[in-house]
Amino acid sequence: STDSTTPNQGVGHVDANNYSSRNTSNPKPPTEFVGCHPNNYSTEKHTLKYLVMHHSVATMEGTINTFKDPARKASAQYAVGKDGRVVQFVKDDEKAYHVAGQNTGKIGIEIIATKPNEGMTKEQEEALIKLSRFILSTYNIPLENVRGHNTFMSTECPTWIFPTQAKLTEWANKYLKV
Image (cartoon, rainbow, N blue to C red):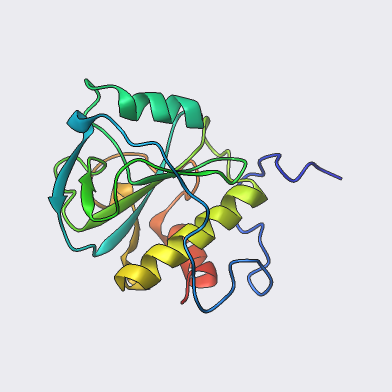
């Protein structure tokens, strides 16, 4: 038997018909607000239209440190750790800097990953499902607007988790219908 926190390559480790976030109210999962440096986001309000998935290329602590670095000029609203920990850096309706100048209307989630093809743990995937379902239902974001970072600009992000937009769409259709 493998430890459930051991990463498995890919996604889809949660039974789509039987997981704890399968409910009708889609509450926000337990979230720790740690904030980020003021240089790394804007308090300008905007209407959310897209949920953008990223892979972090760092541990949770490394991601926190990056977003607290005033020289970095980067952030996301959330990060989801390997252990299922959900950290929030920027308020949902404020602009995190995660899509290089195209941040209006976008809310971003960093999926903690430290190497290519790492995939997610079951705990991480479960937390990502809960958070994503909360965001989609709260802000009325259509399922087809769950997108990878690389659909907005040239980057390999989030291919460490979702190798293609088609794989992300398949995953979203399986787990995020609200």
